[in-house]
Length: 298
Image 1: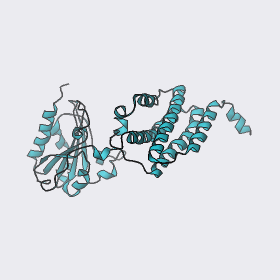
Image 2: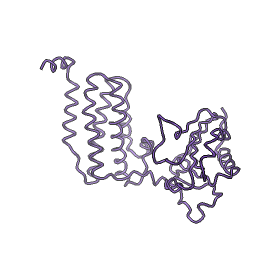
Image 3: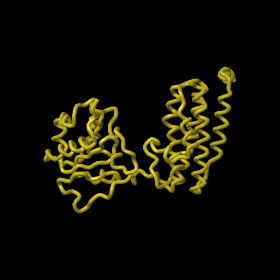
């Protein structure tokens, strides 16, 4: 497989726009606009074509073939099961995985709603045929929109409640040996609450001036080495023993990070939730399978 270079891809993206009178400007966002991201060969090309009207493009979806031979593509606005995020309403996206390994996430944005999309701090102008930004140029691209924000006291308590309440419910699935249910509940809810707290932990340690990255992409950069290694152990294999271990590590890590965050921000950590749920999980783990018969008889 021979992949086209960044220079070749950017030249193509601009040439397509220059030759099409319907395209008024070309913007770029995503990791290629982020000065804090190390470049590599797998970075996507997150591109916005600004247009007056979407309809002419929608009438001929094959127009994107100009970018190269497709491995597979996706048009979220044309999907039923996986529709796009509501904040993208009014735009239309072509997600193009090309056979040479390059990927273009191309969004067609009508001029009348452009302001909504340029609010992203990573958005930068790379070609402006319509002189749309002559009088109001965009600020230099940065990841300012993605800097972790300080939580309110309510948000902090909600995160703690989500973690501990769901952990209590997880105990019965662990006792029943319902591994798939446990894994999904742990990964989708409990681990999500843990990662939210880890984001705030990183924020407190770095004065809420850094971006932890999507799905913890930059955790290794901002966490202490020992904390990062502990976090990695929350990812277990598909056995009940390792899953129990991951749950306890998650509990310890959530407790430590939440106490740190609450101390730094002057919030109250609900130690009762922690104590009650931890004791309950420990109790459930020790229950014999015969407990089901005993409780039924009672």
